[in-house]
Image: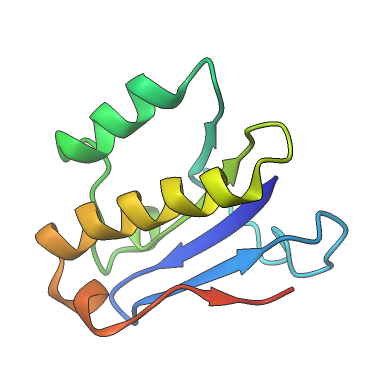
Length: 105
């Protein structure tokens, strides 16, 4: 399972492989966007990214997002899902083209 923090416009993507990491949701704000991607939600959530239903802007309500990517300990596939999401974001938001996801823990 991966927890991933995505921030915009100061673009960065942090990967948390340690589910006990204190940084996960440390600065949780009211109405924090939290997307759960797993075997049941995969298709619909990827479609939302592809259809630009998840927007990023410099406003507090849309400047960040947490992902929980869980495919039963298949870390290789989970990272591939994140890579695909990152590709989608790069197509729509220039700041994401300049970065690569970083592993926090």
